[in-house]
Amino acid sequence: MKIALLTNEIPPIVYGGVATWILNFLDMFKNDPDIEVIPVFLAHLDEPPTDFPDRYPGIRIIHGPQDIEKTFQDIDITVNNLWVAFDTTKAIKDQYPEKRMISVCHSLIKMEHLTNLGGDATKSFYEQEITFQYSDAVVLISRAELGHYTSFGYDKYDAEPVVIYNSYTPKLDEIDWRPNYALNDIGYIGRHVPRKRPDLPILAVERSNRNDVRVFNMGVDYRGETGNPFWEEMGRKHPKQLVIIPFSSNKETVHFYWNSVGANCITGVYEPFGYTMCETLDRRVPAIVQDIDGPKEICELVMDSVFEYHVDKDFEKDIENFKEAVVRFWDTHPDDRASMANHARTALDGFRPEVIKEEWKKVFLSVENRVRGKFSAEELERMNKRERGEQIYGYSKS
Image (tube, rainbow, N blue to C red; front, side, top):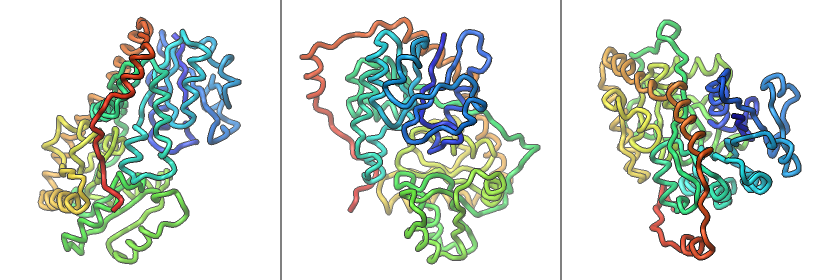
């Protein structure tokens, strides 16, 4: 079976967690006797570097519809990971209607739009529906995402929604690296977008009046611009407590961050999965984590070994809720922190590649054997008019 792994994001072209997912998927099926995975890169936002064929043997590069016929003619199933140029899905199905398409929804663009207070980057969220409409199956990366998918009415399409978690291979052995469990400093690492609430740690520390605690913040700013007035102001307000680290994949910078924090904070009002949650568990660093979405599902079997805070999706209440969780962390003895973190790491067993690979094989078999149903014009019209109570996520602009 030949699988096309379609993406517009693969290292060194990285925008977020999709690139990590792509590498994990390639590694998961490497040397599989029955399944050949062929990476296909859509050069929509970026031209690939010249060494792509050396990095990814067999990679195919497409620039538009003119490249689809030749690129996909020998493909059995396309695993689509695009978060731009959604009409590419339609173009492939128009060219090869008999070939199967599985679309991986790494995040729902409509959820991104609602929880990030709008913005140009996500205002065309409706275009993602094109992907769902022309897919045979849609993979959601958490049960919470399946709930959001259904609440928006996307299940009206013929695509079969399936939950398959992201895979994660634990990389850190206790012998190689060990946290300092006596540290009370906390940190946030990730994107600076409103839905992730990167401001919660410093606001909670400010409210707690703990002048002896530092907050390390490592991430890109809200809009990807050079400089950020919000964080510059926060830095001036907390010159001794807030340590802002420019985001970098440089090993020395990454090690500096993880060696500086006693607990890592996974915050926000929407998180489809949460690779940072996995890395926190892998490093045996105590986790202060939201009680919703992907991060909650990742650690749901070890909730007694993390510091959970309740997400009210109310700006002030969430600061208070988060502060209470941080205080619980501070009140926990270093030996107990170590015991909790070591136990929490066992949560990763359910996300190991050998487990997730079997789930993917089931989906491949399912779509291969599936006969697509057809909706009449009347049925499609009725489904499009179906009334649904649209949920309100995140914070309002006021």
